[in-house]
Image (cartoon, rainbow, N blue to C red):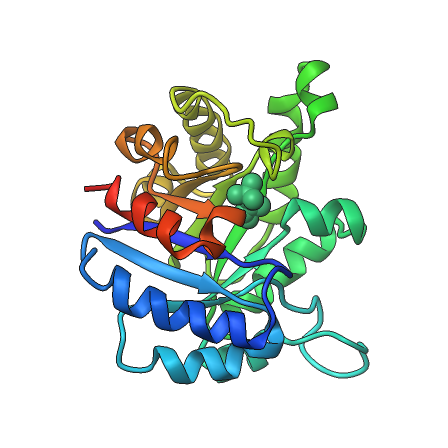
Length: 251
Ligand code: 13P
């Protein structure tokens, strides 16, 4: 099975920077056939990005989709629109949206359903804040986030699901978790998913990713961890050289 390297470009890059970086990714990353490489640029540049990615193995993800199918929701982009222009994936429930835009578990659940209904594979982000961690509430927070996001989802357990564990305290802070800790996270998520669906669904259809201050130095220990199916990378992924080194460290 190919491991995933997903580049979340957040709101970092303007049009020329986005398209230039895609061209560099195409050139430098094509030799890493052991990885599925996915880029998530701003919505504004998805169409041009999709054009550049035609006939390459790189895949496209939206950073977000709307929580309704279509209609009156100013400023949003629907799952169908994202799929129509060539996205394979969509990130759902990123902590930056949960925290700064008050995105709720209920909205996240609707987005997951809409993603599946419209041919997208969701990359569901979960993670505890520093306060949750200090208060030893991590497992409770993750359990609630997962149960709420995944309750009564159309299409499961048949379809693939990506779960990105991104501890909020590790995002953009330069602090990462010990890669070993992913074993505990994996056990917890497996227990919850097995109770919601089945253990075989978890084993066969769910991929577990880590995200939070990944760079070319710390990526290797996560690649080496047997329960980690991929990495969701933010700021390091806007640097072509770092991304090359992150991909290289998976060999
Ligand atoms: P950083 O890699 O910048 O910490 O961001 C991680 C992230 O939020 C990916 O979705």
